[in-house]
Amino acid sequence: MKEIIIQSKTSFRSSLKEIWDYRELFYFLAWRDVKVRYKQTVIGVAWALLQPFITMVVFSVFFGRVAGIQTSGIPYALFTFVGLLFWNYFSNSLSSASDSMISNRGIIQKVYFPRIILPLSSTLVFLLDFICALILFFVLALFFQQKIYIWGILFIIPALIISFLCASGFGLVAASLNVKYRDIRYALPFFIQTLIFVSPVIYPVSVLGKYQWLWFLNPMSGVIETARNLLFMTSPVNWGLFFSSAIVSLLIFLAGIWYFSKTEKWFADIV
Image 1 (tube, rainbow, N blue to C red):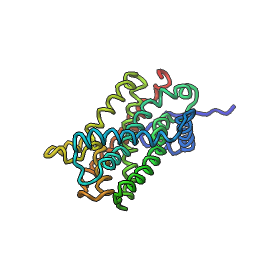
Image 2 (cartoon, rainbow, N blue to C red):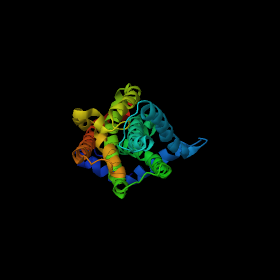
Image 3 (cartoon, rainbow, N blue to C red):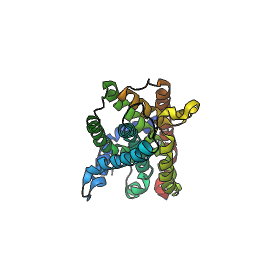
Image 4 (spheres, one colour):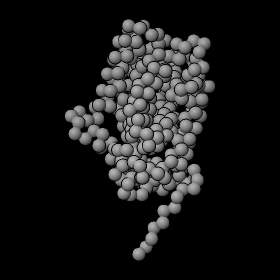
């Protein structure tokens, strides 16, 4: 009988290599999650449009009209929708990744495969939501007769990559902790809901005045603000904030892979 020996990973580099070696499983799990997400729903993928649209309407009423937040001539609905585009992808991906080990406990205990594929593949599910919401954004721009610049459209891809790195990095850490400390799955949604109010989703970065340096503590700030500036060209781009977000997100992603690879050896025993 042929023996298959599975060696324990000895380096950070080997963890990255395994992701590539199992890339077909990676795509399969992502597609499975997409189908499960909208299975047996009445309106299906339309939920990807309703979530940001309803949130945009609520924010526009309370923060645009009641609070009167100034957005440099941009219709507040479009202003906040750009923020919601990237924020919803980040928050949904983080939530899904953090719960991926628990929701897949059955296959973890029975079959060997790189566990890191589970949280990473779960973040790809929300690319479909992002694309649907992006189409809705362009429809809204036509409705408001707001000019959209090509540089902003081209920036969407690198902005999405940075959002993926940030969400995946935090998600890998949260997924690892959630296996051992189940409180994480209850605390994380509250944390994410709170974090939106310290991100430039609802208001511009200028609202902090001389304390704008605080935005550097939030890696999503540079993504959201730079996307707005390039799409609408109403303010100069703060490249320092953008590159800070890119570098920090990459470091978070690498740290997440490192932490996950160090802790995954005991997942099957306690999950």
